[in-house]
Length: 373
Image: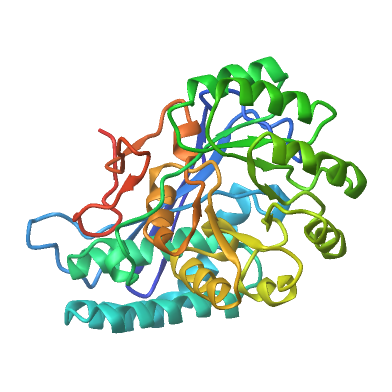
């Protein structure tokens, strides 16, 4: 376990790396050797804030789940947090003042300024920015006394989440799909020679729509040959079939495919969206890629304005990251917020999945999530 603490102005942030076991082995085409989920959870405090009226301390929770594909590890998160914390002091000071005054809209604007300041301070490092952005917004929402989705100006009504099944032998994948058959949608990871056999086995045990994600592993001709079979098997969408930089291949397939092709690795931040117009039908927005719930909200709004169908996804996160994603999920058509459900033991609680497999956005201030005792 790695832990670090740093300060900037009135802000102090403590960061802890968590190593969490999966409930089932979880492999994807570009990361077949992952043994556990590694994520960084932060706690943010402001020394200028008096305790809350109920006597509790004001603490903002955040999480950044690094992915080596994007050049991040838990070590890089710990390394850049001091720079990011320094960058957000001004934006946080403005947000604290407006939150104390009870002004939700101006608080949101000030926090967006803090998010922009992180981008100005350093490029990339989306998971590290995500951890800080979530913590700032959790703390501000608690100061306002409102749930995070209210701070973000979002609805509490969000689509149900799917459940993801990783790559394995077709019979093993089918057995896991059968256990998850109560979910309205399944997301099946593909990217190998037995993809069609895997989908046939899953279809035999699951009636609902299937979403497939190749995580950049297909080649164009094989992907195109597979499309009629995907249609036959009731597949709803194809996520990131080709390498992130091969927008020409993504366009080629979308032009020949009646199913929506969704960019994930090709759609890191809001700056990637314009280049994807006319290339794919949809984009997958993830907080750990774009930098947190504030940047995700703006990216989803921009994607909507550009005519994309919108997917909100996640990494292998605890309920801290999932709750932050759910707060802006009303902007999405498709929801893939199951990261905490893939863990053998989530150390956080407070976010509940209802009978329809929708995350319940309640009335508790902030994220509504707490560390289990």
